[in-house]
Image (cartoon, rainbow, N blue to C red):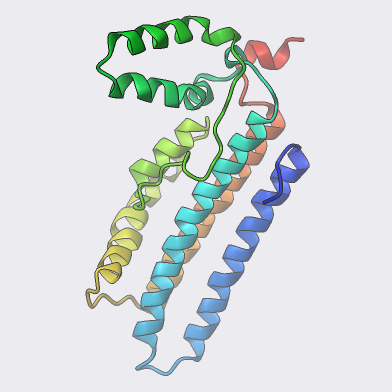
Length: 221
């Protein structure tokens, strides 16, 4: 995997990752259009799983790439906007929540008191973005919030994500006889692609504008 250190590398990663996913879904539509009638249900069952895979995969990878880009800036906690600072401190906060030891709690308080001047060690491994293997709208909105982006503009697609895509995908994954029509599948795919394109745009703009920093840090020396 190529390191993401520059804005150009981030934008290239965001664009190329979405490009191949969109192309694969377009290819699936072409296969479906060539199918005989009795073959179509099985093809569309597989196609529904594919759309979900790209939905979860792109949200997770694009957010991860953005965190890597910000991490490599070498900023301090004090320079980060609160949402990303929380990601940097998540592991330490999680240790405190899990521990019943007062010494551990005291250590965490000391870390938080000094946090503003600490270097921001932002994790960006594959496990840092938690889709919970069930990327419903609520989870998507939480991921977007964690990187300082906005999911509220896609509230109108909540039912597309939760009721249409996830319900069909979960039924298929559990072996239930669940079918969608080609027109329905294409509509779900197109709406998901629209959201993913906006995810790319929001992250790209946030990186270009330095939105990962608090305002005073972004405009100061």
